[in-house]
Length: 212
Image (tube, rainbow, N blue to C red):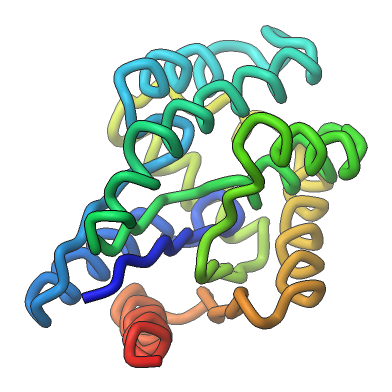
């Protein structure tokens, strides 16, 4: 079977992690060799940077430093994990990728989109997913879900959840704009339903894509 790179994007609390788990289990059951991963993360270096980037106070990093660290984690992720797996015929399913950088550091933080894209082209060799699913949800609903999950699980990864609703509304708009600009490799999935409904819709989309 041919390899493929699939990214799951969306606002905080849109159900990305559940969709990723469901895709991995379902595609494996269908005979695909699937690798699940995440950003920032995926490698020991990326996981170390994740701890620095997602924890603590929001003003811990200058936006320029934040962009460079996110990109550094991605360089490791793509070179060590994504490309070797796809070359070996595996289906890579990533919880976030560069679309999140365009949304969070770009639309959210106000960094120039051209700068982000040029940096991606220069150091990540302009590698983009074959398919990106954008889980679309009202940011107010997603933010409430995500903050509750972080509190229940006692996970110190709430740096972006600490930001106001206007920030997260810009994130949603950025994801939808990305999908509209490149419809050949994006599919928007309504994430307002039950987890089972959202996961089923995501799986159906991915199965259709892989069959093509």
